[in-house]
Image (cartoon, one colour):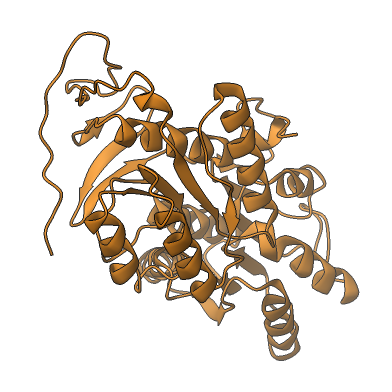
Length: 345
């Protein structure tokens, strides 16, 4: 596989993004180069997180008056995703923003874009094959580690935890699961982890949690890898079984989630769950479009710290901007900097 060659140059008027290294800019005789068409595929509509992301995208598009092709929606369907990207490719945009849900089968799709000189920007998911201009993501292994450390301390190093895993053919589901497992084995060997793969489906999570509670009525912890799809089904199951006890009361099941949607923050305030990792839906949208425009203008980037509290790292097939994702608990749930405490409408 041929890798994209990254050459660093600079000239007046270029945005300085990296501390210690400069972005490079390819000049163009076309004064409208910054507004060349961008294609966007929305990955899912079954999650409050992705709905928020879509709203932030539209807000950025409208405020910047970006030249964007009609948005497509793949709804978590791999075949639909492939068809959407091919359709967008046929319109010859300079960049396509996407979030492939199966990250191991992207080679043909991304190789097609590379051959057509179309830049791929992947949001949240890290394609394992095929060239990408930039991945806009957070450290998903840190998600699993933070969840492990929080739950391990909450349970005093003993007990049983049900882990509602995402799709394991997704790098996010795999990274969160692997990091959670390694941390538990290393730091809390007396805690039993019951792994429940769900393919990111709320109904599957509910059914598996029901079955787990039937065989493990002494369950005292839950790790939800995606609050956007797992929160309500989990709370419904616990409520039906009389197990939804507020934090601090006897019988409370400690729950840590990932996503940081408004409903999770509300659940933390009410004591229904204990913590979540806030995935920055707003920053995903902002920097996905930033890099889509940068690619259209011929800019390139180097690994290193950025001016927006993130770090660009090298991948075998491109670059990745790792954005910050804080752990949210009752102590900082009202922090106004959290995207879920701001309006997306």
